[in-house]
Length: 140
Image (cartoon, rainbow, N blue to C red; front, top):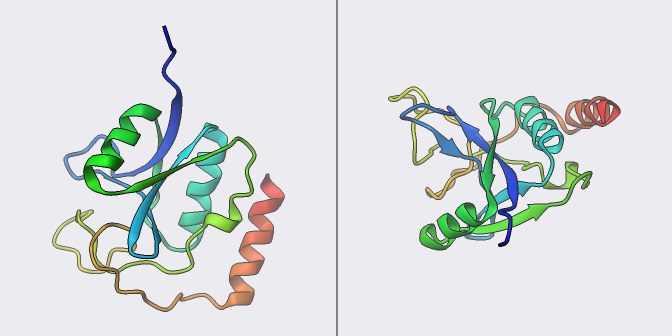
């Protein structure tokens, strides 16, 4: 018997009627990141929050369930190995509209989803973002 592989995904509004899964945009496709380590998922969550995303919650889930969900939704997926360099995967741009509305009818949400993305300019300068990244990397 094969033991299911547990991974961690980032969920917005976890355990509510309005929860959504974090995806990154790759070309015209969405990708769900599956973290092997809860600590890495938490650190990535903090990196997202530092870029003004809503705060996601790392949630454990069976990797096969996520793969099946991705196939049904037309999403891609990627397993992020433990202690992988996370900074490379932090998105530079946020989208304004999502498939879910965190506190509906809010129009200014900042999450990647399968809706048509409308990138917005980051509010922080590149040097400010680099400074935040260095501080966060120091926590690793």
